[in-house]
Image (tube, rainbow, N blue to C red; front, side):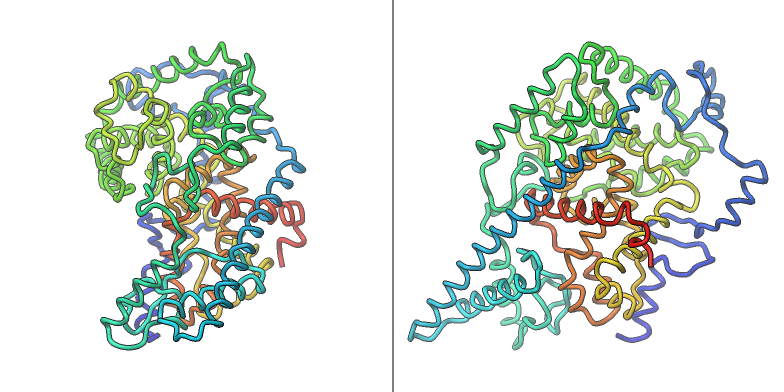
Amino acid sequence: MSNDGNKFWKRNTAKVPGSIQHVYGAQHPPFDPLLHANLIKAGNKPPPATPGKPKKAATFQEFESTTSDAWDVDDDELLAMGAQNLNIEVVMETANKVIENHSRQQERQRQDDSLEVEQKEEEPTEEDPEDQDLDVEGEEEVERSHEGELPSPEVSFTSSPYSDMRLVKSHSEAPIGSPKDAESERALHRQRSLPHRPPVIPLVARMADQNTSGTPAMTEREASRLDKFRQILAGPNTDLDELRKLSWSGIPRQVRPITWKLLSGYLPANAERRDSVLQRKRQEYFGFIQQYYDSRNDEHHQDTYRQIHIDIPRTNPLIPLFQQASVQEIFERILFIWAIRHPASGYVQGINDLVTPFFVVFVFEYIEEEVENFDVSSLEEEALKNIEADSFWCMSKLLDGIQDNYTFAQPGIQRKVKALEELVSRIDESVHRHMHQYEVEYLQFAFRWMNNLLMRELPLRCTIRLWDTYQAEPEGFSHFHLYVCAAFLVRWRKEILEERDFQGLMILLQNLPTMHWGNEEVSVLLAEAYRLKFAFADAPNHYKR
């Protein structure tokens, strides 16, 4: 790659220390501990949380000056559950079972492929090109299994002389010949690289509970798990520890809304109090809307609202649900109210993505059909208001745990990216050295992984499944997410090591082929992440060089 090409990529990524940086649309200077200390000495430390429940503000300026990023004191009991720990033995056993089951499935597939290869070798007739390609795929599966990798059903994003950055399996399989032949060959590779499944997989909807092999949405095992969830949720006081243990491996769609509200701390464990809490919090949210939403046109908040208004149409642009005007208006209200309630950070690009999983899950509380093309105007007004308020409060709960990702200089993200680099250097030195060799810095691709919680890297159905575990795991969205990112990066080690220049690596890392991922792939990713956490979280001497 030419020097000019390298300069182009590096100008568009966060790499230059000591200057204002643009990373994924967010402008901020690099985190400077000395500057941070001076700000505190100068008296710019954020005001402490109000010791009691604040009185209702008479004006917007009074509200903004007294609002705190913390929750009201009388809601502390709802947050106490966050300190609970899962039974490590139970989760570790689950993680090992997931990986073992996946490995056995891949081994059976490898044996079937090998048998098919042997049968074709015995045939006296000449093989056609399609048979030869199938043989190559069978050999690749064998090679991957010897290397200790989990075989991937996906294609990697690489370049070739005739590809124009389209998808081919690897450099070694790049088509040779005329552009017309190359195009047909790429189509064959893409078709055979994907597992058997229905022709279209919705990005959300009921397929969120379906794995990529196309199995029915409700098996006997899944029905049994649903019964267990309902038994736990039916009691007068929900056992949150048991609910977490059960939720770690995924939550059935039918009980996901109530389970997310409980695990996030939005609802109390006591069933009798839930209706009153829901009513109070929903009224409180729409009180904010009525009193303060008109201030979006004030000069002081014009920039914030303008950025929100620009970002909303970019949120999941391929899903028709999020392009409906009424849905975009809901998102604008949610994000604006959150921004003025959290002046320490305000609105930052990327937060808009974090509303979507909650919105989709809470829509499922009122419909049975697929949600991807669902017209929300068909819902009753009260139902739509409930979805909006619940999405706001649950997103707020999530952001309370990772708000340093979005404060000035975004120090939380910078720390996590640095920790990811150190962790990968310990678990896969080959990948780490390979990226260092071609001058790829982790901040250039992993900033988005932390800022958006991998939502730009995974289909929405996979994000929802991922968040099942994040809600069940202590500090799931902050601490555990680091190990998920490490497992996610190492998952693509073969494709990474095949790339031999800066541009190729950046194209791959920013366009990882996960469109056809489902529950199976996410479960394996989570199991690998848990094994990393088990090995490194309590071993600081192994975590750092």
